[in-house]
Image 1 (cartoon, rainbow, N blue to C red):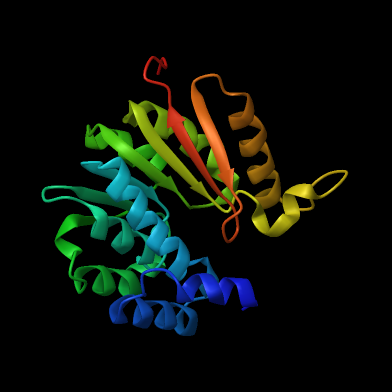
Image 2 (image 1 turned 90 degrees about the vertical axis):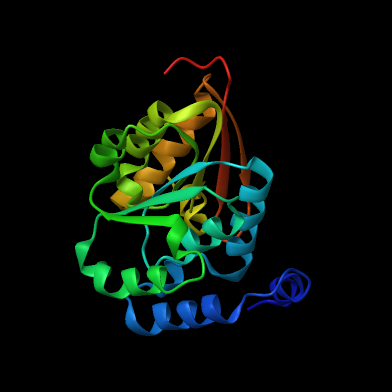
Length: 214
């Protein structure tokens, strides 16, 4: 960890013990444990939920449940996170951590493809967090545009992809290509406003224009 990152972590809200233990367990027991949001991004997600004040949040890509718990912490009473994980092999690890958290009652953990299953819920979301398979980001984005209210927000993680978005002349793998295609498409999309934060691995904040057609 570099000096500036440590300085930031020392000057923001602390990571509580439950999230600390979840992050450690994620890195010990799951492959690519660093995919979990972690302390800084987790506190940002909670803060954004406080600011946006959503009632219903859609998450694509639960992984170990860290980000879902952080967003649920920011919800007001009656709010709910609907989080989808397509990899059913993660359920045995993730479900106990979600259900054992202090905000587990605010989280609906669903195994399945969010692109297919989320619209079937018939729920109008105020916010979506896309953090699943990078190859499907555009499909997830178009789905989110259909189920998130005009004026609502879509957050997309890993949009700088460890700098690989700068690869030239062409990306070497489909994950990088998926991120590049997503970034280029969103940059041109007149239905939304957007900004990329160079936080961690890149976090894009997208606001659907109130008059945006579905």
